[in-house]
Amino acid sequence: MMNIKNWLYGTIATCSLMLTGCNNSKGDLSDCENYVFTDSVSNSYIYGFVSDVDGNALANVLVTSGKDTTVTSENGAYSFDRCRAVNGRCVIKFEENEYFSVVRTADIDNGEARVDAVLMPQDTKEGVTEITRFYNSQGATIKVGNMQITIPANSLVYENDGKPFYGSVFASAYYLNPNSENFTKEMPGGDMSGVTVDGKSVILLSYGMVEVTLKDSVNKKLQLKEGAESTLSFPIPEGFTENQKYNEIPLWYFDDEKGTWVEEGIATKNGDSYSGKIKHFSWHNLDYPSKRASICGRVINKKDSLFPMY
Image (tube, helix red, strand yellow):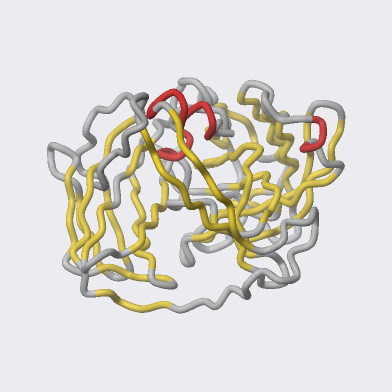
């Protein structure tokens, strides 16, 4: 969880904030706006850069928006003359075989938008498992630090056609801690917008995210079969108060088509972790929903002078 107070005071000295918005009573989201899904093509100039977590440019990354595709150049750059827009936000997907795929969104401003992406490799790194091999007939428990993903025996099929799979599974999992300094750059989407089970538009406070990639020996993707469930166990991140450690917290998955998080399931607190079941593998997020608010304020330096607008 990003500490906004520390960021503000440590970077720009001091500020004055005023929060406005609907009543934020715990669990009461009744007056939140309903989510209305609109899908269109925006004739806007979209550009950006793709890099790895160390800041190195990534070439030949497949970039997709709606029916349009391109690949990044040697310096990680790409551009479109139009984009697929969902509820006024541009939705872009980034894919490369050796990295976890990610979808990013951005508001279109004055006919253009910059959408950058940071991709995490599917190999050993902080927050990522070593590539784990197991037999579908036996199942497995994948661990990323204190994060655990339990996959039952005989639960996997081919993602593209749902046909049964027999043999070795090559699995890699990517856990994104909300305390990570790169959290906002690496997470799916451009913000923490979510849609509840009853269609309410909310903002989420993340307790952690995970992406699980399962493939066969020739890199064909695998998925849970209909009726099968996997159990996710999220550690409670440092910095959360006792009042924030609720007995139950909703689970959400990232909808690549809508470019937003969608509520699906509940995780229950058990000691220092939360456990819940999912029906498919994609980005999943443990989040407590809240209501949208506006932030107004002023930013000054140590001489009490206002910073200019940029």
